Length: 205
Image 1: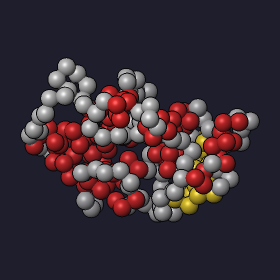
Image 2 (image 1 turned 90 degrees about the vertical axis):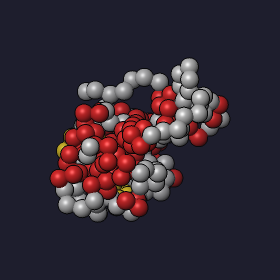
Image 3 (image 1 turned 30 degrees about the vertical axis):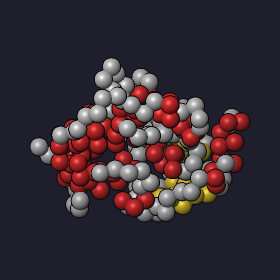
């Protein structure tokens, strides 16, 4: 299964904003973005005025990297979003929010999307009572994501700390380690700043 394996902090510096790819480390003084905000590379510190295409590209890259999705899969999400009724940009973000690894992240069981992806791949969750170890699985209204019974001390600690993070209103959280999807995620539920219209403009050329 393809995934990005390079330096995470360089991605934040490239996009000029924190993507919280390392979870709690991004909130600490150890965060590399706090020390070096310039883009990586020899000419990273040079001030550059982006053209229209550059702004569209940077917005797409930011969304891809925030959700941990590579280009081929991201384009597939765009095509699905474009074929659905409604606003294509909001449809795209809604699809990304419905990914199983994002649901685990929104439940407060992981400090980053990368960590959530790893937990899903290791088989720590069920979807409607059945094994679910594919991060890209899309949840629907009525679905229940739950933590499997385990002897893992770390997983138990994560479940105990679930209430520390405010869950989006489209999820009904049970403190025993489960969440029910009670509605489709809306644009206002996304707590990260995106200009999704720029992404749609890029792909629709």
